[in-house]
Image (tube, rainbow over all chains, first blue to last red; front, side, top):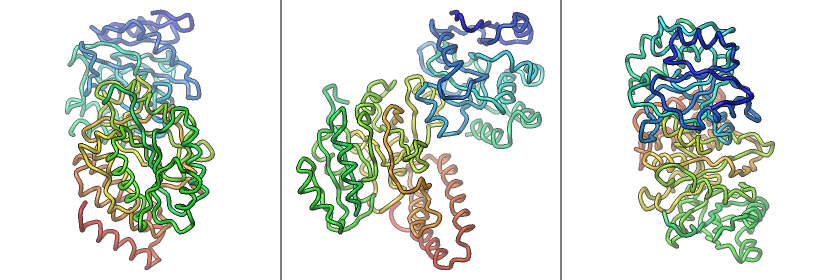
Amino acid sequence: MTSPAVDAVATVGAGPDALAHALATEAPWLWFLAPGARPREDALDVLLAAVAPEGAAPPTVLAGLLVDEHGVPLERDLQATPQLDAEAAVELVRHRLLPIRSAGFQHCLVARASFDRHGLPDHARFGPYAGHEWTARVLGDSAGYLVAASVVELAAGAAPTGSFAQLPAAVRMLRTGAWSRGDAVRALRRAVL
Amino acid sequence: MTTTTPTVCAIVVTYNRKDMLVRCLAALAAQERPVDMTVVVDNASTDGTADLVRAGHPEVELLALAENVGGAGGFAAGMAWAHARGYDWLWVMDDDTLPTPESLGALLAGAERAPGPAPVVLCSDVRWKDERLHPMNVPSPRWRDRGHLGEAAGHGLLAVRTATFVSLAVHRTAIDRYGLPHAHYFIWGDDIEFTARVLRHERGYLVPESKVYHWTPEPHSPAGLNSDRFYYHARNSLHVLRSRSFSPVERVDYGRYYLSSIKQFLKLNWRDRRRLGILLRGLRDGLRGPA
């Protein structure tokens, strides 16, 4: 899983130490993977192919699809929250992409330059939702896509799910400005409904 | 789903637009994957449409209605006709729809590559004359079903919750299970209600390689805020809200959209007593009768 164009680094558990180690390599793109994740053979190559999509804004965040051991998409996982923009979805789906508003760090390729602009994820405050808070900040002014053909297997329950547990993180994300009020309301509705 | 080559009946509803109908029929005749039958549903046009079809298009079946029953009634009649004759896919469109030559083939190819259960609804990428997405015909993606949405995108398909009758292919099993569109809507909202009803339980996709043009004079939005036709929007949206085509949660979203359109209409027309009367009649009639 290598590309001559991009030097990607996998972090273990996406924790602060692993991230610090990855940033020390000065790789232009960082590939976050959850512990226990089993990427399919072409998972990284498919992500890398979406780094410069034709006719679409260059992304800073590319999230892949999480499936369980039977290949079934994890329905309630928070890996990627779609940007609710039907027109953008129609335009992007021909490239097998969907626009996203935030993504978790379970299977996610991130442009290194984003860390220079937006700082580090706040694991202390946001815990398992740190990836979402950080990418929500980043994607407030840049593009991010779900690259659904890039598939990683993950045991069900290994990713944080949309639930009331998300509520404190959502409130903090609202306060930090990572989410707009609309984003927070939609997330809350997803958790409740 | 059958394993043999599916049969397709194109259904074109028309009313007093001969020139557009001729262009639409030419576009259908130019399909790389030919349609097996084309039926024109003439809503009692007075401009000689029926004569034109009989004389100039003997290959086309003409369903000449005795009165104008609106787009909703026309689609219901045409789909009933095609369903009764056993076609697998019913490809519906207005007379101002211009499919590109690959439209139908791409739709069927989309069905073939769809993951999981076979889809019963397929729709096209609908553009206006200047190539922008036509605002009337942008489907609602299946936002709430994120796993399915993502899986479909991985196959180059957009999982949709509702779509419009501008290049929409409906599999006959959808009619078997959920019935026909409601003719009593007359115009507007019949496609949203029908696709919402079917896709509450089934799968449907936008196939981006299937491109059509919706050749309206203006790229207007569906609500028709500056038109007496807002009556149908006001009435039919209440019918949709009273139906079970959407889940209760989805009805909240649809209700918000509806209230927003009412607010915009009032903002534009609050000094026009006649228009206000149209709105009130729409609200009244929307609360009555079958949903």
